[in-house]
Amino acid sequence: MKYIEAGNYEEMSRIAADMIAEQISGKPDCVLGLATGSTPVGTYKELIRRYEAGKLDFSKVRSVNLDEYIGLDGTNDQSYRYFMDHNLFDHVNIDKKNTNVPNGKAADPVKEGARYDELVASLGGTDIQILGIGHDGHIGFNEPDDVFYAATHEVELDDMTIDANARFFESRDKVPTKAITMGMWAIMQAKKIILIASGPDKKEIVDKFMHGPVTPRVPASILQCHRDVTVIYSPNK
Ligand code: F6R
Image 1 (cartoon, rainbow, N blue to C red):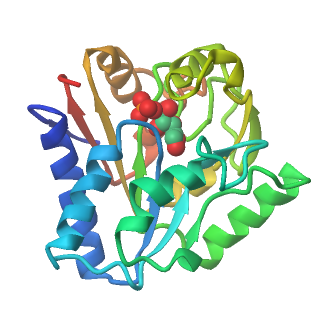
Image 2 (image 1 turned 120 degrees about the horizontal axis):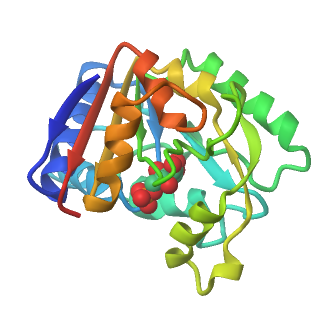
Image 3 (image 1 turned 135 degrees about the vertical axis):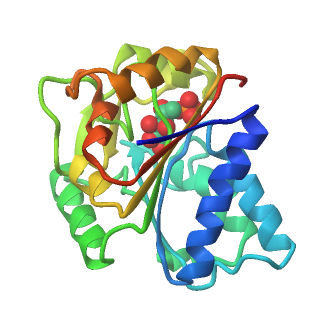
């Protein structure tokens, strides 16, 4: 794994945006694997800035997002579809038909998971996957468990994750308790992975997933088995 320590959040975001921009310029119809949460917001702002400066063209780009809350549809302002529209897609010339987020309203999450994995496969996999990391080591919403789950699947969110995400909701009891997330197959098939994290509170988990044992108790540790991972960490939020 390659490790880059950034001076601050803005620098972390710039370095991640540089890598994504290089990917889009080199392969205009590339497939981006995208994440939500607070960490990638600065990276998306950087990409929008470059698009507005005429330096990036998203017209042929395809994308697949990692996860979605169960029970929320794309019009709900807490859904990850809404997040992506507002933080990136509405501000660049990507064709929304080419953007994909798991369907949190699917009647059968198992079928939805299979559909999503087939979609990722039919796109030829992702060229570059952006990841954040939870304090418990989750990537996507693959929470600590006894096993790594390969398929896109439904998960019960951990209390720690619900606590962390409560900041985006009116109150903790409004945070959905379930999500649908890409499993390790769809994440690990990416040709290149960038994991971004910032703040002193993420230092311990970053050290642990990079240098500790590979275990489903620290889901991000599986990234030690991928051959092209860049971790960009800023000690400052
Ligand atoms: C979101 C996702 C999550 C977040 C993680 C960190 O799509 O997949 O794994 O990346 O919960 O969230 P933030 O960036 O808000 O600390």
